[in-house]
Amino acid sequence: MRVVVVGGGLAGIAAALAAADGGAQVALVERRARLGGLTWSFRRHGLSFDNGQHVFLRCCTAYRAFLHRLDAADQVTLQRRLDVPVVAPGGRTAHIRRDGLPSPLHLGRSLLSYGHLSVGDRARLGRAVVGLRGLDLDDPALDAETFGAWLARHGQRPAAVAGLWDLVTLPTVNLPAAEASLALGAKVFRTGLLDTNDGADIGWSLVPLGDLHGANAARALEAAGVEVVLGTAVDRLDVDGAGDRFTVGAGGRDLEAEGVVCALAPEAAAALLPAGARPDVSRLGASPIVNVHLVLDRRVTDLPLAAAVGSPVQFVFDHTAASGLTGGGQCLTISLSAADAEIGRRPEALIAGFHAALGDLFPAARHARLVDGVVSREHRATFRGAPGSGAGRPPAATPVPGLALAGAWCATGWPATMEGAVRSGTAAATALLDRAGVSAPHVPADRAPGGAGRALPPAPDLEEASA
Ligand SMILES: Cc1cc2nc3c(=O)[nH]c(=O)nc-3n(C[C@H](O)[C@H](O)[C@H](O)COP(=O)(O)OP(=O)(O)OC[C@H]3O[C@@H](n4cnc5c(N)ncnc54)[C@H](O)[C@@H]3O)c2cc1C
Image (cartoon, rainbow, N blue to C red; front, side, top):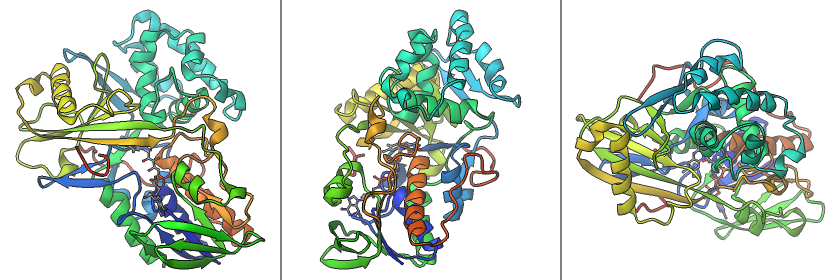
């Protein structure tokens, strides 16, 4: 069976590998000159930066298996136990960390002493935890209200939402709880924090994302016999009457196939696909992410990552090692999810403002000289996971038998994440192979043991053109 995969983001890479592993003859066509889609790196003044800091969780079993498939599991680190220092102006720090107790007791000790919430707000957390554990994640009604409204009905006051719930909702759903669909908020808290005691241990790349995903994928695809066509946009998809023979037009070349995986962003997919298979993407929208990268002349924190409250900073990551910076300075990346307020601001203003905000959190930063600063912006980083978005997320199989959809925006149950992208790609390849009667590749269960991101020693991420 010949399969053409359109799009070389994580979903397309996962689909191409799964189809090749299942015995198909695969070609992958990507518009850009590189693989990796929304995960990419750029160089500036000899240092390497990512378009945006990416993290994964231990519960991201498909993504972790994907890293193994890319032979890249040793290029990421994964916390042995979840530990997020949460800093406030003045340097006041509390931790969200787990211990070895079973869920939900694993967080109890840290939340009982979590100093960024009042004692009353801490005492009320249990009501929402119990409520979350009782939700049926498959219930479509969960996509009819915001997570914030649900939290309020379960005793969570605005201070608790700002001081705790949004620390998780913002970076995972890319919206604050007040705007996020309950379906996505509940998915994140249940799968990450409540269904198991280790699901939320955090992992991140030790190398630039362009290497972790792009270069490693190129090698893995070549080894799997996949023809990779870069720098070529697919501009035409012709399908015959039975829906199982395709002509994919790409850069003046016609690729013939019995199966096609469309692994594009929603609008691009809607523009390419034939009428009978065209998803209605009108309710998905988009949510931006902005990263502010600061190169300082000295180290100002020993924390590999930290969340912040009472500050414009949401999360800050030590990117020094991955950037290639040596000589005693520090490269910090400030990651801003749901960045509607920041996406249009001038880079100089963002750099100066966040340098000052960093000084409020880490006093040593007040004395640090800014060696360089750069801002990366992704206007359409993810779909907007608001109530009603679930109905705009199609399954892998389409009404055209040989055509499958992939992309982090497809119906995976997960928010738009690397895990969702990989799951969707594998599901799309599986749908095609199943139909062709070929044994399908294995989609990892949520709790597959082992996998990528084994605990390594702890180690300390523009629009396509940076500011
Ligand atoms: C700044 C930022 C931070 C993020 N942080 C996290 C995080 O911490 N954790 C996490 O899990 N997720 C995170 N995400 C989300 C994650 O990166 C995405 O969900 C995932 O990479 C999407 O992969 P995809 O393959 O579905 O789509 P894409 O990456 O959009 O891939 C689509 C591909 O199709 C190509 N294409 C478009 N048109 C054509 C055409 N006509 N012909 C051929 N090819 C075409 C594009 O060039 C692109 O390579 C973040 C995203 C951003 C932008």
